[in-house]
Image (cartoon, rainbow, N blue to C red):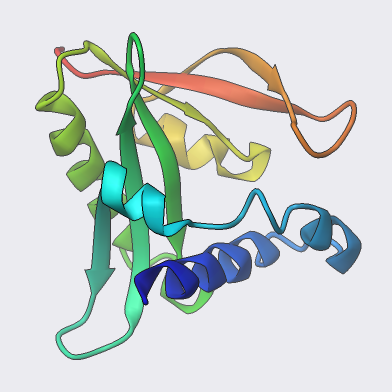
Length: 144
């Protein structure tokens, strides 16, 4: 099953930011990829030939925009271009959808990465798990 493998990768990647175990445990449900996510959304996987998965991204269609729901890289593969490759693939998928923007809610630690990719902050959203925590809401223009 792919969903448990992707879920484990999400959790390892999130842990690489140095969050405490208690906080990671509170995020466990938020860091879960369900089989329905894989069935309904575009899931893009990066791996070496006959090797382990190095990362994945997931793009979904929302009412008025495309949404980057996930982009996770195996900690040992960070800095090797995996994130950029997954971003580029996600953008190509989103460009095939009927909207002009790709939106995402970023972990604050990942905001600089998304800015380097060309996304810009358009606001903030409340964390669904941690009271008082605000996450950058970002957008990338697909038609420019």
